[in-house]
Image (cartoon, rainbow, N blue to C red; front, side, top):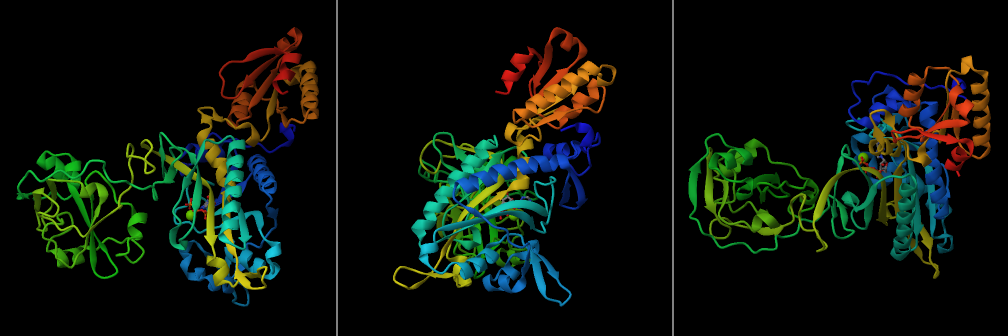
Length: 565
Ligand code: ATP
Ligand code: MG
């Protein structure tokens, strides 16, 4: 490829809304241009990278035995009514009307469409198992589109769906897809972890997310330093402390804390560590309020809390009026000592192991010191309520947890019968009986991968592509070609030779000065750079540099060609 015939449009300015490195670099290198919030054009440069990712995904899906199809992006409301998701999907669903006032959505995902396809196409167990996939544009009206294509509204997804006669068949294909995902992210050169994920409202079976490790990631993941345990923090179990609760040694005493509402303020005021204080929150239960207690240095985990049987399926904090009415105290002064009997007190495992703690006094401007469970405070039951933190014991009993940030690039999920049941997708089994199919779904954020890879691979000068994603593998940079026909001829010859070896080669024939030329080639992250100069030619050598390294190597022709073998 001759760069003069391409459209490369690097820019100096960093757009104000680009908070993270990948977004900045994708704009600076000219890979993407914004059309509207969360909606981007992929420039020719960006598309080259996106296509590379797509190719790896497609190759591995095919290798795993999945078959490609292409479903429409515009989907009729009636289908979504069948599963109840027309309402339940919420604000992310972009709803549209046609000229006859018929309603549609722009597909955020394709469970409904594929299940409709499957119920018409699949009639017999003999057609199972089968896994369909597509690579297609999705639209989700995200509340906060940000980070460029990382959390976009329009984005490219690979979505696959498998169909099975029974749960064993589904479990086997799940493993197969899990392995294919591992191959995909390994081939793309990403540092990732497969983590156990929450199965959410859909409930039931197994789910794993594939998370690329990066500080800018929106997810938090926990993994053991001594085993392969890894889970999304939403889901990671916080185990009970090894040591039993000490016996009470202090008397219960009311202390004035006139303006101290937060744990930090109360602890500082009393000269104690936050661990010595109990945090109590009142939330809306299915019948009246529910009190939740965690240690002062711990945080409630919304996902775990929402699953408590006492709650209506979501965690919602009680408002100030309800708290005052129930306890007589404003928020910030609530605790389990003397709390009305009608309010169940659910206590986190670590909080249940506390003795002689500080907690809210259920009175404006006061706390208790020296409080103890059972003796002073009612404890309805103990549950896992909190987010794990760095250093917690791993729930599998091996080692301790690290907590890191991750970018979710893939998600595999055993859906079970949920969609097939709602949409009556059945096949006949070998005894001629109709059976609801078991389903799995498997998503990859193809466009998000591009941004995630940059988060992991960049320096001050720009992107450092993992080789399989690079728009070109090699850049040839002739110095002063306009003044020296020999340099041009040598660059052309090398370009042709490397291309004939099957390499993707970029010849920078724009005639720029070396500084700006090198800056562009580094910014767009080409893994190998070859500089051809008059002096080098006279000596029979080329200047070679691997992107990410700081030294040039002077190589003769044979040595240079060996780099690419
Ligand atoms: P997230 O929690 O990041 O919103 P999700 O759980 O909603 O993701 P899935 O429904 O599992 O995502 O979609 C499959 C994949 O599509 C995700 O793993 C992610 O890589 C990608 N993806 C989801 N939402 C977006 C988005 N707004 N922009 C870019 N990629 C996305
Ligand atoms: Mg989402």
